[in-house]
Image 1 (cartoon, rainbow, N blue to C red):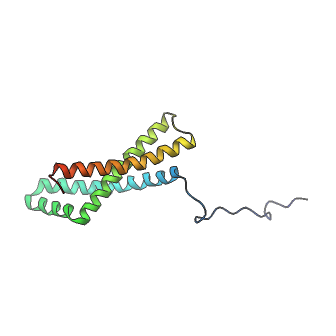
Image 2 (cartoon, one colour):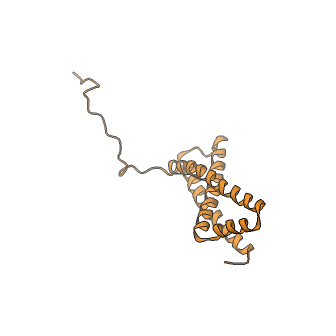
Length: 135
């Protein structure tokens, strides 16, 4: 006779140290995180615009904050979040058309999103420094 379902040994879920998250899941989580980070970055953009509309002294202060090493790191993170979230949105738009839904193709597209966001961020910062006359 078989055991009742309540007393049968149930399989254990893979532990986080064993389970390797797929790239599509990781990119989905990063897409959500970057979406949240964009709210914070937009507040920084509003702060900069308000400073530009207020006074030259206040604008110089905000420019000094953004020009400090920590300000530049925050702006680098914001620009990466913006490009990553944009490319993630394009990836989802492609999926909405019914294309690239196969597991292998979706994984390649997820890796392309990550590589593209890092590359675009680097290009944006190089172009920004070149427009300002160097590093």
